[in-house]
Length: 356
Image (cartoon, rainbow, N blue to C red; front, side, top):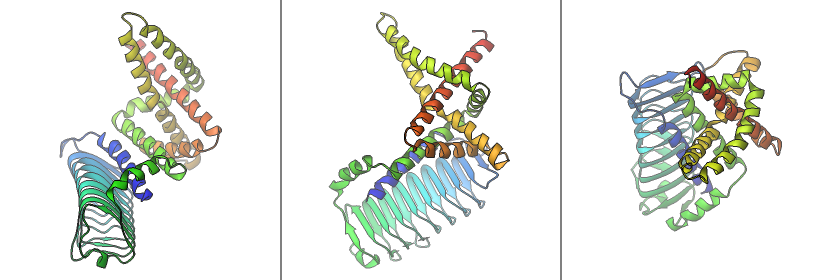
């Protein structure tokens, strides 16, 4: 059951990262990009993917229709998600309505208002489903963990492993369709599972931290690519200056905020300054990780890639380094100072260019 709660939290992180991408018009404004490594990213109001994807597929939008096959994992968030093609890897989806009509080679991890697994579908791995109404009519070869308001099963439904069910109803023939053990959990125990999950550390904490970092960074690079790239270049060209300035500003700004707060007319400026500083600190490590990934590609892989791949690489490396006792904290602090200082430099130089 802890595994189910972990996946639910991960899905919420994925939701925030994907829904922050702009939902745009179907034809002219929908955005779909395939990277040199075969991964694909897309967003739009009504996005139809009718081509096969070699690697991962990541989509966000009001209505997503995946008609082609996916060579690796599919991750999606939207109002309606329809997976008609076969997915060789895992399916991770969150939305209002989610229908899986194709085969899944890995795990099926889904949270939504309505979840449907059609009779023509086979899930080779485990199924972890959280939804208001869950309808199952396919074959699941692994284990299942289902939390639902209402669970419906069709004539073709079969789950060959163990099933843990947390639902308001239990279909009368459910036990006959489960090859392993069937465990029905009282819904009132959900709060205990949330508490247990929130207290967990180790690998789960690492995954959540990494996904949070990926979510924030990918969204910022997608929406503000030029700004993030310029910040990364600022760190590359003026690392020492950015680090020192970041440390100075990290000390100076709180003092200035307190001084403004105790003045008659400065409290509003103090609040604004605090909010802007918090926002800057939130995004400060993104350009540092972006630069780190770019340097790794340049000096280790000896080739170029896109900003998204640079950031993915840098974020994973930093997440691993952060796990090292003491050194990880120090690296994280330095990265924060470098990014914060780069932001200050960028705004200062922008103000000079505009004559402020």
